[in-house]
Image (cartoon, rainbow, N blue to C red; front, top):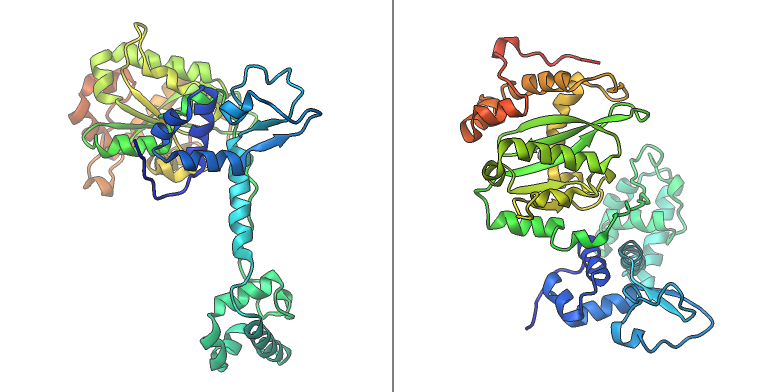
Length: 388
């Protein structure tokens, strides 16, 4: 069976690929999971794998399984090893892509012509925009932004600090991200953000739940687990220990037990969390004590807060009551319930001047709201003031 995919592999695909390798999938199973051709997988492993050299070069076992991620002899092996790591592969791809675009596509004669015109204008104290507008020849060759890029890259004799207003120009510097380590990368198979979008596409009527954590001071021992219903702008929170993935799963499962399996399938069918350490065991909420699947879990793309924008947007109301750098260690669950009751009773223009509490009550009933500790606050009595 052939698979056609127009887009190139991104970081989510590479995370899934590494998870499939650790789960000992064969190439056909990997292709079916990622929906790509076998050639794409072989090319990715060949171009972006990491070689660890040793004394002995040849390895007959690796000829069959391509790389050493899933080889049971890898720990005591004294031969050359080839490993696939999604972080290393993504870095190689980014560097390859940026280096291929770094070389100017303009002819050398035209670059020299640009250099002479710009250098003459800069020596007269003119701005780059003035030089560009005053010389029609530059407009014929390229745009003003291209000339500025050539100067910043050092392709012209004019230096960037010689430009007018250079020091006040806002420049974006590339950030070096240290990707968060996943406890077991195999859990990402079928749970990436792409899988989430595919699920939502064919289940638009089902409720979506987004999860995140909010901290006060960095030195705090506690944090707030926020649970958001994007369709209703409804959000409630649970007090947890900071960096404790086991407690996160336990708290969520306690809610599931209290509301019942049937309600769980109705209220929590699709669950999306970030890649923080608190959610490293997040997939454990999919099954109940009897092993029956009651929910679906997915993870956002690393360092992509827009994947759960509604959840992040609702955190603004939390910061009204709990500003950043303020400790939350002395707060109780009752304090949080009261805070979120006021937040959910706050009128929203985006909801046609109604409240998240009212919409959630109409959809899931007052009994559910009582179980999670959220109550109705009269509109004139709503308070969004600091509690710490």
